[in-house]
Structure formats: C-alpha cells, structure tokens
Image (cartoon, rainbow, N blue to C red; front, top):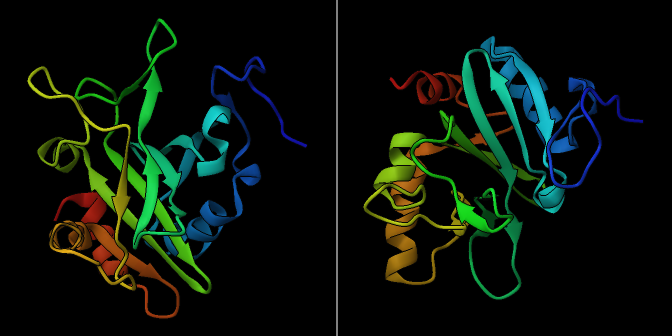
Length: 184
C-alpha cells in the first residue's frame, strides 16, 4: 500500500515514501547510491508513465528525472520517453528551463543492469531537451555497453552515451558513479 502525501490523480505526480519505489530503483539505491553516500528524498511517482517507472526525486541536492528504458522487439538498444504535459494537456519534451539536473535511465536485460546519468547540459547538446532555438525529443534510444549497435548512427549514439553509463553488479565502478554525479 502506498502512503500518499498529495492528492491522488492520474494527471499529477504522487509523492510516496522512499520504501515504495520500484524494484529497479530500489536495487540501485541499495547497491550503488548508499555505497556512494547518495540519498534519495522527495520521491514522486509519475503514474501516467508508470510502464517506464517514471519518477522524480532529489539525490542529495540534485533534481533527478528517472525512467526505466524498454527493450523493443525489432531494434538494438532500449527506448525511453522524455516528456511532460504542458498547461493545455499536450505532451512536449522537457526544456532547458525545467528543474532537472540529471536524467537517469535504468536499463536491464536478463541479469544485466546499468544506469545512464545524463547531465542537463548533455541533454541540451544532443537535442533531447528543448531550447528556444530547437525542439527536443519526446523519446529516444539508449545503447548500454552490452548492446551491439546495428548501424553507423546507432554506433555514434552509443559512443557518446557510454561516457554517461555504468554497469551495476559485482564490478560497479563507484568512482565513475561519483564522477558522473559530481561532474568530475
């Protein structure tokens, strides 16, 4: 049972206690964040995108937008959404005025688990977040280290994305995790 801190509606996020987060995020919290002294607070579940485990939270002082990518049957990589509803109820990409420090994308395939940690500057640079000059994207593909890119564009995308990726498991690189969040 979820403990609701705000009104329950499908159009607005619901603030819940941290112990009720999805299994993937809970595993990352236990196996990575706690070992790096990173603390989740102010967790809000976005019910409209629950199939992507959509949520927002604070990680220490950073504003995090988090999703879990989905494996699709015909293409390499995994697909993830990146949008919000505007005041008229229409979906639109997040933009450079939204209070997002990092967009974390959790990826999983069988026993493999990893996380992309994209800073807002990288999302803007690669056209994922909108700016006054360019519309962003409502969704895009991510290519974890274990996926083989199928074409030149996918290879190019995977190459830049892997700078912001770490594996989760016995060989998690905690120095890289800290470097990603601290911008080192």
